[in-house]
Length: 398
Image (cartoon, rainbow, N blue to C red; front, top):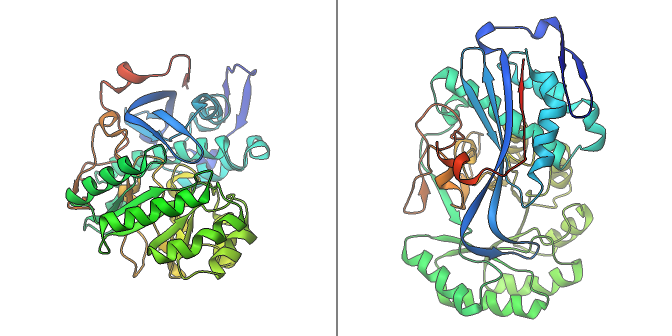
């Protein structure tokens, strides 16, 4: 079967093997992309970006029986890049095929010519959006939340709060926000580091530990802003204040640097927000360069690749604590789906909760498992009307 789709870049023709044609009800008949710019409660900043909105690229995949699977991502900028990859390049390979062939679809999309211009970044994140949408459809068809379809544990997952330690806060504001989180029941919190003067990071870290006490777990995130020398200067301070982990201390591709840093400290080095493939994670793990694996379902190729990375890391006794580029919607299903003696842990960032039909529920620092069928990615009815980004996305039909 050949599907031809008019495209802004010309007519794309993709050969679909006959063996992929399955259950008629699951046949993909339309694909729509768009993006939301969801305003934050207050402006925030880390060492690399300052934000007033969180942008959510969206794909909605409709099957012949009328089901709609929703895939999402999360970006600082340029949502049109992800949407264009799906609308202009992936859609011709998807329309007319069964949504249930998830792994087969993943491989076909991965090895399209777009592979040669995007094994990471926008192209791979677009693949993640499609994969999430297909798993959302699969869970809907099963009449179960995604975590149950994947055989995950039913108990609530312990969460840590990232939404109080921002780098743009003064030291006084930082301490006020963190102590407020502790007072409201949080026992795990994270702060941003990466100030131009490393001494300021040292001072703020010591002040935070003094303010929150010794019984609260504290992490820090440098967002890749240090070189190895700066990271080495700060390690003794972080050991002194008992950081649980040091996240993204160096450039995300610096495997040797991460390995050297991990070898010098008893603290765990964490990374994954900017690592896009199972192969790259495997290299970091093999070289003992990270011990907290923060694989993000929106950065690796969706649920399919996330499960591979998480299983590989857990089998080696490492912690899997996903970075929440999806603002927790999919990750609340994924944590606790692999065999591990380490308690599942999820990052809590509530920025886009009001954009989704099913919101996350956290009680006393633990996130409860969703109960509705699907991947919790369905949007609230008013989300597009309120926050859709003009001129981004397209609708493609069979």
